Length: 246
Image (tube, rainbow, N blue to C red):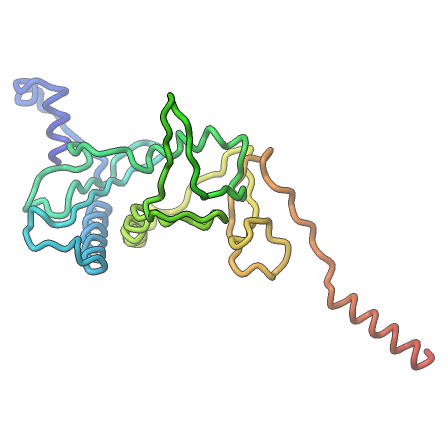
């Protein structure tokens, strides 16, 4: 409601708010707001229990976070939780905090490579040095180690946020959280084996997962394999018939 009040002050003069008799409606959903508040509090407590260094007794120094829930089709804000406890601090970390863009900037970086690589492309994570304007720059992983085989790099921010998101999605009413996303034209799916990054062609893949591709970059559909067991059975039967003189 503080965010709404700030918008009203920007849009209307004080005398207009007093005299126009405006009826003001918001897209805020009380159930989603409560679900977001509870998910954030639970998630921050979970992190504090897991990482002792993040747990602090002083209320103004406790671990903080924020959650905003929006409808993609309309842009309506269904919930906004700007901090852990509104009673301790009214500072809204969504609208007032200054922070680096973090992972929100990744799509702008990755989109430049979508015509070159696909979700199953294996990239090297080995150390590499670049020459920029006469200076050298060597990127480093957060964990300070590398792997030439491109093993997954743990994203600590994503790992911290994922349980909060999962709790939130489980608590949001079904009529709001149901899946109404329609895959755009030109997008196809393939079942990919997580261990090798190749299309699934048999039941031998232990961890298959669905990946989305641009149609022109998608790997070809795997051809169904003939049942090997049936072939061997026919071969064995043929040999038996020969020895039995049938």
